[in-house]
Length: 168
Image 1 (cartoon, rainbow, N blue to C red):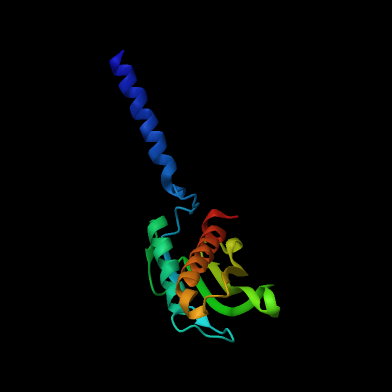
Image 2: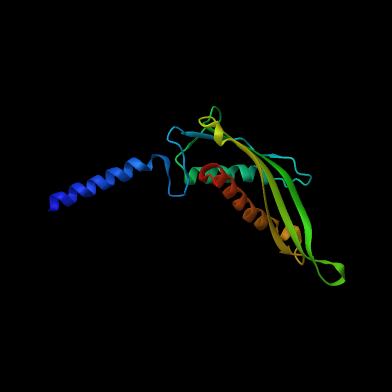
């Protein structure tokens, strides 16, 4: 009886191992013939330029792909290519308080992503993502900017990853 249980257990393990090829536990669905990716440095074309935002977004996307997939990063001839442009960086009032003064402000970051899958061109896309955070106007932007950018960047990178790998 113990022999049969061992055989069944080994069969189940074999089945699970053979299914892992195109799936990861992050929800990413990656074709087994895709092995490499490339993230070109983001360009910043926003009317307000935050000095480190483009490089931070580039690095954050690379980190996300490295931590969530087994793909190898290369600098040319990749199976998957990401190109990003920051198209918007704006601060706008969202609610008015006493004396017609803004009670809350909103930082919005908008990016355009071009994704190319050289193995399956049907998955190529070009789309825009936008995320924002509101903050109390009692704080200056310089006091909260870094933490807001980090939160927004994390969501933008998650959006890019999901659109590219989870197929939402």
